Length: 499
Image 1 (cartoon, rainbow, N blue to C red):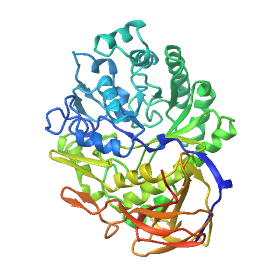
Image 2 (image 1 turned 90 degrees about the vertical axis):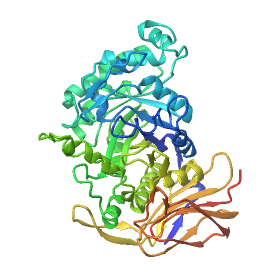
Image 3 (image 1 turned 45 degrees about the vertical axis):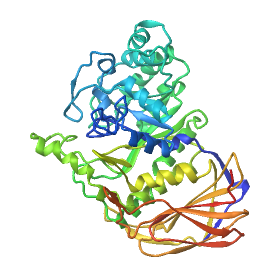
Image 4 (image 1 turned 135 degrees about the horizontal axis):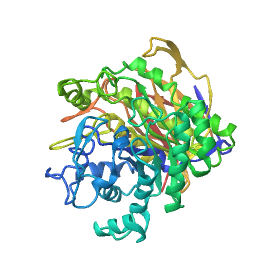
């Protein structure tokens, strides 16, 4: 196949926030994950130093917190100050000690060097509670909650710019689920109060690819919103923990842009595409494993609903299939940088996260390696790429449906601060090499950065690193040069890049 592109094919400058992450109070994401005061690897504030470094190494731009389903019964005021009030988390059916709250989260973001992004309780919470949270975080001295923050040892405002009203309040599984009419009204009133506290904040609200829900939301609340939030997990295995086989996972790669196109189309139809961007602020190929919780007939014993969550920690589940999908999704949000301004991989640590923690260290899963490639070697100006002779393969999806997918997924970028191109190429073939001809103007030396593994089932674990970033010199580029992509690989080729 041939790839064509030129300087006239620029789509735009992508936001660094498309490489964001997400953390929720679920299983070991917070406690025993990023926050573990009793561990010898933690710093003076209780944060795992190895995890902090790993997050800094992938230049995490923004972290969404505290949920997720957790937030819909979470009352932030009980988790600040010296007197913390534990509560029973009705979303995940565990006791939440509240030792990690707003101030600890802000401290985490400062240590990483990323923007905070707070998701508010629109389930059992109120518009006033949400606006009080903005007051606590952003006002200098005015009001009870700003003064309370100061008393808690934080004289300077936390300056939280990004706020989400609610999580998945359209879903029957969510505590405090709303009808589309209720949602439009609540978001409007919450946004109004939050903006009255700090007019500079940027707001998003829970949405999905449902036309009626989104029209009702935007009809009421568009003047207050800068973002519209969508979530998606493609491998729906929250009750089974039986991941799709490699071939079925390839089927998912053909649908990374479906939700983006639908929501973008609606925004354009309503004349809002210049005002409101998409925040794809919860995504992963695999759903989290949490059986007998988000069902009417719930598990009674902990053996039924709680202990099975440990199976999320099986590192053998996170193979090159996850890496291939993750790269294809990151290519998709890059290609749609004109409408997608933020995304958050769900989650960052443990569960299905790209980082796994254990008592003596961490494991950087295959998905982490993809983020390392993209955040360190891709450019920030995205070009449209045209193809000739694109090969396709027929795969059977997880639903048993046969469909065709492209063999190679492509994203072409430039750098705004220096010469050169960076081309992301994903070869989906499990066992075969594939050749790609780069038919465009560029000059200079070529360097390849890639991950593949000995097989598509390769994974990383304690004492086992099968998927790591590799580097190779590829010579001097000339137009029409052909490169050969390894099977089941994610490769970024830099051409003429120099700092």
